[in-house]
Length: 99
Image (cartoon, rainbow, N blue to C red; front, top):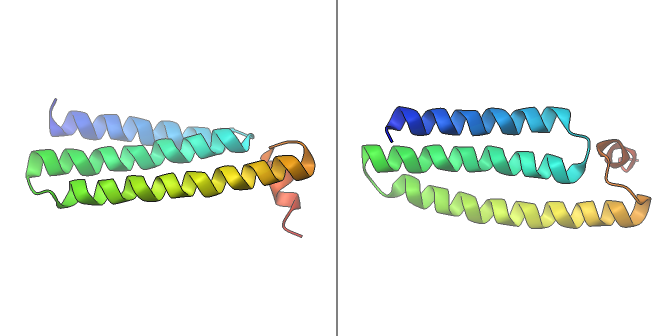
C-alpha cells in the first residue's frame, strides 16, 4: 500500500465519522463517530511515519490513542449518568442538562 492509499483510507474513515457525527441522535453512536475520526487521524500519523521515516509520528499516535481511551471513559460515564437521570441517551436530552 502506498502513502496516497493510506491517506485516502484515512480520509474515507474521517468522512464516515463526520457523517455519523452529524446524522446520529444516540450519544453512543456520536462517541463511536468521534472515535472513528480520531483513528483516521492516527492512521495518517502512522502512515506518514512509515513512509517518511522517523518514529516521532508513531509515538504521537500512541499518545493520541491513550488520550482517546481516556476520552471514551469519560464520555461513557457521562452517557451512563444521562441514562440514569433521564432514562434515554438522545442528544436532545443532553442539551436539557445545560440548565
